[in-house]
Image 1 (cartoon, helix red, strand yellow):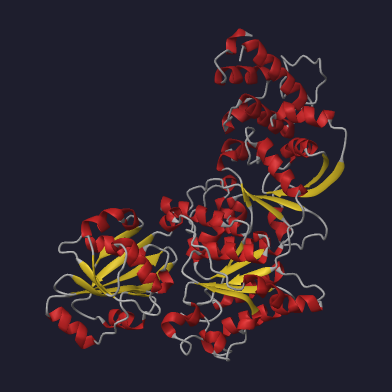
Image 2: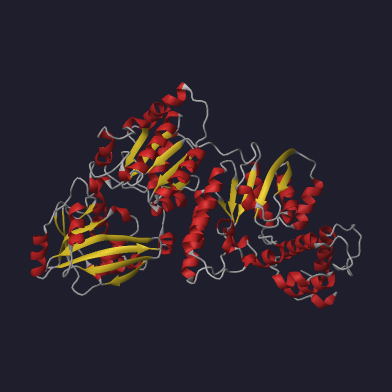
Length: 543
Length: 86
């Protein structure tokens, strides 16, 4: 819709039901007015937009919204990170942590405006950070924040720097009609459905620790020490459940393992408080979609809480209607997180039906088996994490952590065998190798997360990976790296255990179908070629 | 687009963006001599020209396109090179 067409539409419009709304953006809103009226006229509505004064969006977000007023906010990256505003120039120095903290704060303010309809224009960032790759990663991260808030993403080509610098209007003339259509569509859409389902991850969210590795006695969920934040979170979930919110859990675990803490009788939340606890190794997006179908509820009524940014990205990429919230890594962020969560499920009068809702819905999901759907392609997201995999040769020197890892990891474990330090010493004395890997990314170090013991005859006898870093393709990259080394391993001593389904899935993919326990042949040349792209996701260092 | 078509369309855009009457001669219009050509109308005019002619007008050009004649030459130059034929 261009200018002259917009003029004609407005001039010939005979009137229709009024469409009042507040239109806010960081910049000049006036040039949109004609196009907003035209776009509304096309829907048979008489647009009555109230434009926020120039550059007052930030202040507006700090005031409570007016009840009953529809707000449509057109967001750009500098609404999250003010230092990124081209019109302010590039700051002399920018602290990335502070930028991210400011963006998180804005996201929190936006999350509290539960009735606002958000549009996000992923305009490019000026070179805020010395490293261009980090600026790109920051831009993608802000985009994922916006997507997590349920913002509709506009094409980046709609941004026009020249016009923005000269007039403050961030959208170019070639796109203003289309952007106005998106604004009007958002204003005219029915109010967002209140959230009805809270889907929570378990490990390091409902409790502190990894149930598959730490066991029921090793995870913490009681009001003491590291269990406190998780206890408080559970208490909020219990209140929400009492008010009629459906609580569900999705976890990459085996069901009997995941249910352990619930059945311990020591946890605040019981199994009966959940409409479903879905434990499987399928993509979490697939688990949530299946749950929505079984419950016959729209995905826009779902909220997903996880501590793992990769899982959050996977769900928000494939299920953009689902509101995604990150469980805070720092205790200091817990209060703001719980505020955001509670704001998504407004208080209302509680009926007997509300109280019984979990039981009613539980019947719908009985026997649910998540469909084996592939997850999202996370290559771009993983690349932006700027992961470094440092491979350590532990054949000499301190190997304590590597041996511990072999002995405490259950899910991604080649055969479940436990080894003593003496066992490892014997293998090494006979010409074997012990390798381990540490992983770091832009958010910091994940520590030593992988260990691999290879015997002198070239067979992997132990291979473990911490489940904290599942879904990052570490295992593929490591094996491809190993396969490209001189004297690569030719086989792996595989055995099924009650808990090592993730390893079974991985080995079946890289080596072909697994038939019982024993030595599984590996083809190094094929592995190195097939998973070369996974190696490219990491900067690999050897120490 | 022929030069005459381009000019006809451009005049229609300028009249509409500056809220001038249908028959107003805009060939000598300039920001200095048209009262309604204020900064906001200028933004609307630039956006309208971008949209109608499929152009992206850079910041410096936006600041310099303050007369009908300058705009006509700019559009002609960036829209098929028919600038001098008016």
